[in-house]
Length: 107
Image (cartoon, rainbow, N blue to C red; front, side, top):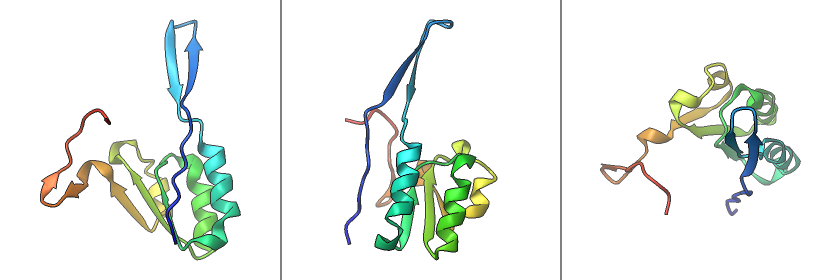
């Protein structure tokens, strides 16, 4: 079984009131639809989103005997959501070998 990575162009929204540009991932609904419609094709779902909007999806997956792993920075994860995952991985604590992975721009 292969892993599938879903990516999408970042949505850019101009906020003219605050003279700012807001960047959004804009992928939540597509992620949910793909996760549910393909549920018979995997045993473990690794989700990088961590807001409480994902709770119904995590409940659905757990009810369908899926393992749910959430990978995200701990300080961005909803406290409530953590009750609905099998495992939470704080990406700031991921190491490679014995070295902590350095933070910085993605090249």
